[in-house]
Length: 406
Image (cartoon, rainbow, N blue to C red; front, side, top):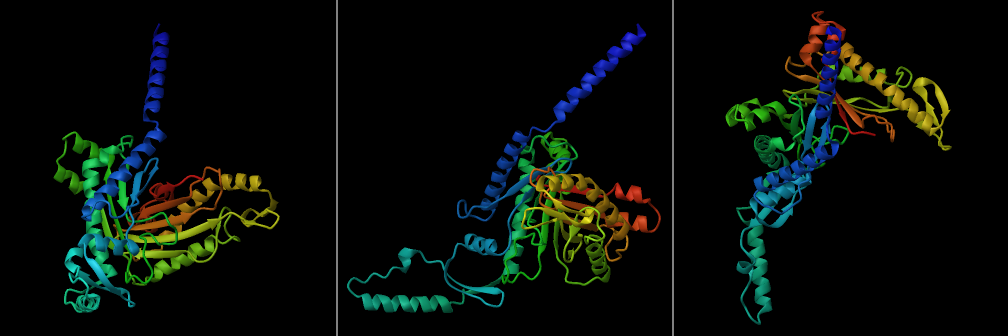
């Protein structure tokens, strides 16, 4: 009887486990629907913050990564800034000039009816009066010079305000997130090469800035249930607003050269990189390295050569199979290298991060990510370097964020 009871208890426990697993499975269609609704809300809040409802479509892109959460990316910088400037001030721009990275505008707030010259049958007089008015507007003391940086600073404050309001009032729109997953709103795009805030060459924006606001799903739930106040929720938000540093740190340069060499085709046993691994030092945030990796070279006969595994004359299906097989090893070795060589860094503060953003080789239908972002706190690297932590323990603290699905 006892054996029968134990078996029954075991079956009930197994069924409960299976039911729990089914309940936590993400409904992908619903998740995409929630993300699209949230994108629309963010775009609306941004337009309202800028003081005009339908002046310009604000494109917001959201993406869910299991185990991490949802990231929303808003555009900022360059042409976007210039368009936002006109919407914020509502001027009639009559003169624009600028060649030194800044822009000079002459504004007139007169309506079209006020500008109209009432003089029937006197076209010459009207033309002279209009010419004089135009000259006065150009010379007007109300004309002002606005740099790209000053416009960016205004938009940065508004973007953060929008992010805070969204997370506080509408964060629960993303209904399927797990308690430890998060919602992140940032000005970083998915474009590769470090151009993560849509800068416009020649716009006068001398330094890029990274902005993000982040809230955990559990905090959002507690706010909605009345367990914490709005002010308490705001205090838990993780806000990053930092600019790139122009300071040259030798240890950052050395780490760049290390990874450039490690991932050449003659040393790597998985994917390989060509050219230099570039980086960006962000004040009070850390350093982000950018790397693009490949798996092979396609010839004119559409056959592949894969130098890291000494294979040639490979068909596309064979190449894709190998790419898929190599991915787990590539990710594992990259995490290990991040710890092993990242411990040489000395210029990062304890609260700063080492981040590697890697654009992966193309492989349609392979099921590997489009890119991955590995990050680790500087203190983890220092503990490993000083012998306070083992390599295995340090590697376990590397966060991996996967973006896209090929």
